[in-house]
Length: 193
Image (cartoon, rainbow, N blue to C red; front, side, top):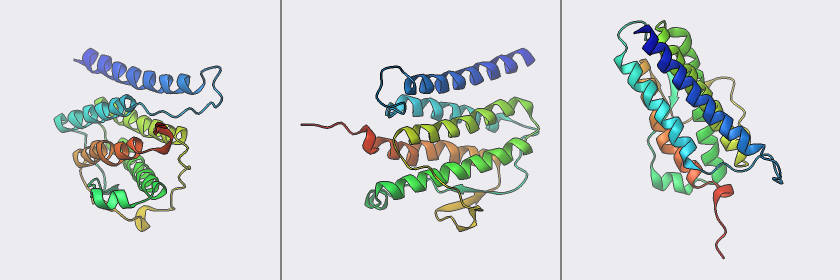
């Protein structure tokens, strides 16, 4: 059993590192006019969503040592399309980036709260994937986000008190607002003449 958990942890970490390596190799490919070429392929995001789902499933099957020590602030995942479409690209990007920051803060707290070592690799992988998504956003010329001193003043948030709820929010946020932002990114729009 220990071998299976360690093997699957190794495979999960290896897959995440491979995705990050592919992103970096794409950016530094010789002969390109700019090192930060837009990453518009949604398969990268789909990979991150799959790994977030894997973490959620692992958390739901955990019976001991997998609780959150305190409530955390997370982004709202519900998308009201008429409201979303009325926002300009900068407002959408800020909403997504603040949500990614909140998730990163919450996952860092979860990492310190969880004593089940089998879950540590899933949580670590989720944190690395959030950092990679921020790198994807930078490749799309989306301005760097400056996080606030605390989450208290952020709009569009709510609080969760269970690890399973946190990981469900993580999956839904990636599937919803992050996907919408990437789909509409100006750097990914093809000029049709």
